[in-house]
Image (tube, rainbow, N blue to C red; front, side):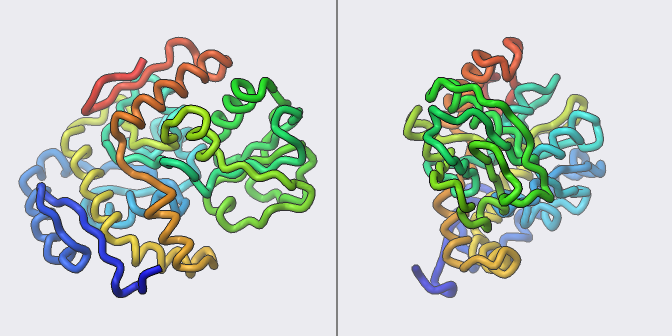
Length: 311
């Protein structure tokens, strides 16, 4: 692992490659860009951000780039509920909830995905998966919970009894055959006694489909205007975050009591933040499986601000 001082990344601002040492110098360029679109960004927007480490590259610079945003942090399942209720204008929500929602639009190519191992979406099991009859699903999850159900049904031929693993519950209290952990809880929890089998669901999806897995997307509720401006903002915020992974990982190391190397590797190698063709095709396949097993209605679809609609 390189020393902290020598880790350098690059990112793009207005089609120019910039190193982390130049980020502050290019804040002026970014602000000039937004000043030119002030009419589109002057309204205060309520934005929902995932409170886990995996979302930090998308959110770390967002408030500074656009002070008109009011950012509320919560777990993915609650953000989905708040967006559906109209309490938020735009939020990072589980992709399955984006597909389930009415009139939603994906407003950015910034996403939370995993090319292979996710590291923060872990299914622990007492038994081989084809023998699992009950699963406790992390209360903060919607997309990973649905992925668990799809994998068990489609790949292992089982439809287990489902219950919720609450935010305040301890692993020692779990009585089901398997338990799903996501986010920081999955990162910081040790393998529980009595659960000898460990499955990284990002790996399981990749091995099965040869696709990356898309966990969450920036989604706008119906009626939000100036999507072009918000699309650009979230992309720039992501690129700033990816250029600043050293600082993000250092802060996360202190907060989560994990090593810097573990946090940095997670953000730079396990997580992936750009929605492209492979991610689109993966989400389309996931939608088909979710419909097949009655998790999504046949009418499930999703509009993209830049790109073809899904469904």
